[in-house]
Image (cartoon, rainbow, N blue to C red):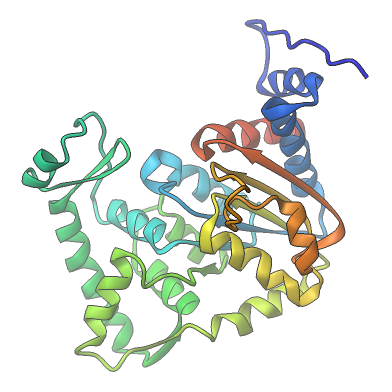
Length: 305
């Protein structure tokens, strides 16, 4: 079959642009088209539960409202995230912000009390507020609970914050469980550790698997939406190993497969581990999540109209 050239005009909708990218059927454009079509299919399948995993600085990068909207619209049933995205969601919930255009002189940034994530910046004064607020919330939680799983802890935190744009808050309101198997590896985890030095609160990390496995076994189909790699990606896929793997998956990652890392592993590799069904529909797109996911999501939603 011949590759058709893409055509662009000022009257195009996002789905029109995606379809033009699909005309090529190859490389990043072709994969973006396939991912868009598969995501729309996943949304439309009433039997499919979508497990969303998020890694990297997606909340600091401005995708917080997108995550919250997915939850509000009932388009995801499970969230698996790094502790960092929880931390930055709470930073904003407590009145802090993320900033841009401060340059790359890290010594100067340190002297100004600023931290850098690529070209995203945070202020130490916002983290001071975060530390005070989360300590207060943890105390309120510990006054009523002595043993919690990580998922239960995040649920309790969501009940105590008021920011309507917080994805933690929206997950609490919609009953969407949020798992963070690497929670301790974050500023939130550090504050939790410090709090437990003078508290009887115990966090049961193993307990989450009881809850998550129940969801896996109760789901007729599971579709994995994997933004970035790392531990959230593995936890997403590995939890579904219990039932032979996911039925569909989309991953967007900057990592490559040559090093053998899980973050860059093609989804097809998951079939050999029974983390993906042998007849599952899988699409991997190599690129920046902050560019590709809004495009793919907007295209998929356009197709649903």
